[in-house]
Amino acid sequence: MTHAQEIQLQVREQESGNGEQDSRDDEPKATKRRLTRGSARWWMTVVLDMLMVLCGGTVGTLLGRLYYNSGGKSKWVATLMQSGGSPLLAIPLLLTPPHPAEERQPAAPPSKVAAVYVGIGVLLGFDNLMYAYALLYLPVSTFSLVAATQLGFNAITSRLINAQRFTAPIANSVVVLTFAAALLGIGSASDDETTSSSDVAPRGKHALGFVLTLAASASFALILSLFEAAFEKVIMARTTRWVLKVQMCTNLVATAVGVVGLFASGEWRTLPGEMAAFKNGRARYVLTLVGTAVCWQAAAVGTVRLTARVSSLFANVTGTVALPLVPVFAVVLFGDRMTGIKAVAMLMAVWGFLSYVYQHYLDGRRAAASGKGAECGVVCTAARTAGVSA
Image (cartoon, rainbow, N blue to C red; front, top):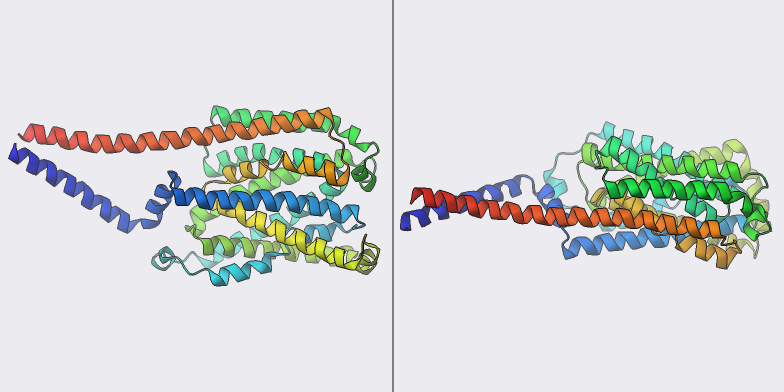
């Protein structure tokens, strides 16, 4: 029995030594696996990122609608507001110390990183433009609910680009959200009646706004999947500094697209008159633009952090949680009509979100069970080895 115990002890020491060596060789991956199993620190950071996405996205959308309702007319200014706050990210970037993993890891090829910045940044710039037009042509409640289709689009792009598993709950989420958007598309003509938001939107533009929102949602879903692929295959790091770098540089490129569009379209000539005619004065005009830019950057940072920490699909699901919030605030602040069709579509969107949350819950339980099974397998193997030797 003493000999058997010695063999069992040697087996455990050897496995422990191998585990320590693997941990030293691939510490960032081990850290990621440990955090994604649901540690308290991981959940704290995820919840913080979710709050940034929810608060920033909700307030940013409402302020964007307020810009149009108060006399703003420039679509390129509305586009710039979605990415123009990116220079503010230089402050947290300078204050964030480098992660130890960044020093041990080889640097990503500068040419590939630059291609990521330019490619995603240009896509983001035109995506912001489509959203700006869509928000002008649709009431904010309808806009926010149609934009929920980006979760369905992201399920497809995540499958094709990021090899995301397409399970029954995720499929249910995609189908429900698709029907919710179709329901809103059929009933969007009713929003052309006398509401304060519809008075701002040009008559007969609801169909175009609906199509632009769908196109922008599909484009944003692609952008999130490309972000995840860039972190996985090009940058190969998911630290806070890299998240801030990627977010700031891609948004600077998107801002450059907006600036070129603003001057090429000639809309810059109308800005002094737009500011003078803005409801409640120039100060409110500036505060609206600044507030919108800050809110969208907060939401964008939270989205990219969730994409890097969990997945692009999870980040998109978090944005979907804001669906019940925006229409309610739109009814209170802008006089949008909460029709029966919108209420049903909102409930369907919430059901689609809960379907994906349930899938995430199942993944967590499966990972926990797999971890326990692996530990049991090690112990049982050692016991059998000891028994045979004895």
